[in-house]
Length: 82
Picture 1: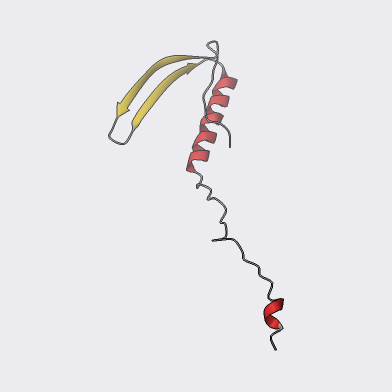
Picture 2: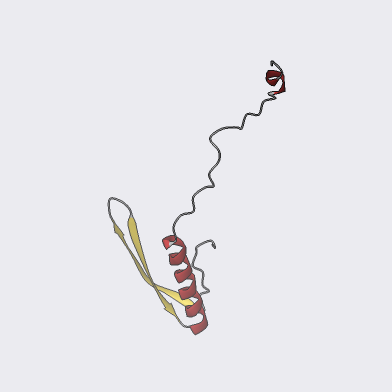
């Protein structure tokens, strides 16, 4: 998994517009870019697809640990009572 982020140089893409819509739970930010470099467009699309794939993947659970420490005792003294 990589760190999500979008990066571009001004010569490769320009910000055309952006808007925001707010709701009780969160907000949606829409960004419109004008991309002049086909290679950079592909890279941006690849980054977006990877971010979406990472978000849609099920969350990994932490490894399960035993409930408590295993207690080991020396029972030899107790067995000699015969």
